[in-house]
Image (tube, rainbow, N blue to C red):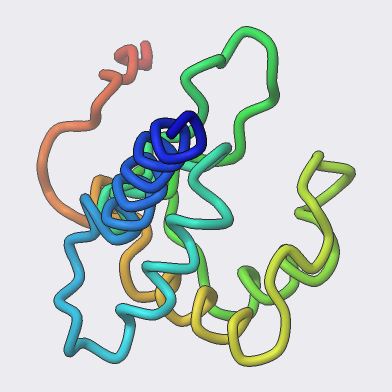
Length: 137
């Protein structure tokens, strides 16, 4: 009887964890980039933010290094593949080959497609975010 009482909560916890694997992912399941979003949420969301993957980075920001916020930074496919294979750029603390092969390709394609959604186009004609001081003649 004791074993049954222990198994029930463990089974419920396993179901709850398994059910939230794609929670928060904004990419439709029939989209070719869904697998990349799913992998990003599973492997990258501990350090990186990207709303399309439902990723908010680490809640413990004071004790761990944060990766870039990809809502605010646009990445190319090539740069994403490089960072995945080499553990980031210029000594960044990122696990090397956190995904590999086809999974790395899926994450890089997803990142190239969905990163930078909050980046303001530098070519638009709106006022700059930080006004520049007037120059004297």
